[in-house]
Image 1 (tube, rainbow, N blue to C red):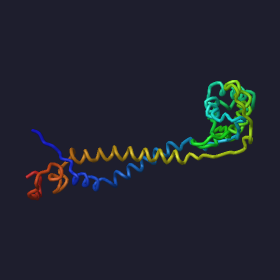
Image 2 (cartoon, rainbow, N blue to C red):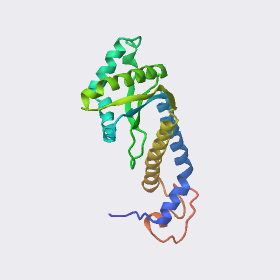
Image 3 (cartoon, rainbow, N blue to C red):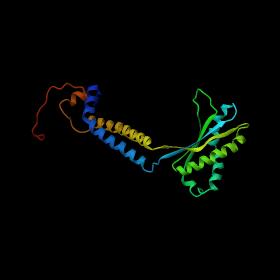
Image 4 (cartoon, helix red, strand yellow):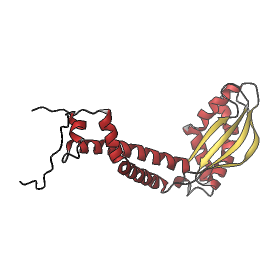
Length: 221
């Protein structure tokens, strides 16, 4: 015997009205759990920047500097400096990133750029920024022939990025995923599990005309 379930707009609205609060509550709890888990161990990120300048008119070289500072060779140069410092035993425990950011927009060229080092340890970030600016000036010519850069301002600008934005995103992801899964589960449960819910259930689900209801005091009779 074959029977089909018609998912009409009326049925869809009916299921939403019936389950919206419990689905929202569970989704909020799931989002909060994701946000809490992501917040564990989250730390502020400190970015220390040094302003530098390309000394000739060959501004196109600035975009290549980012490739150099992110290369394995430049990381090795920084590691050598770290191993000569007080950070030798701590460096493996602290992650960092280094990049070159142009001061100009995509539509304009400028000889000025920033060397930016980011870490969750502000003192370590400052140390690496100082070493980075020195080593970049000393070694860039070996990487790019004719590259000529100099330091405009030393690494004294610190920018703090708190982990709040990442936590909010984790909450949103957790909420959306939980909402979709729970809503689909509740819809299937209402359509396929259990007894007839009320007078409109048969007409809403199976598209059959409801001619009336019969009250039965004792289901066993």
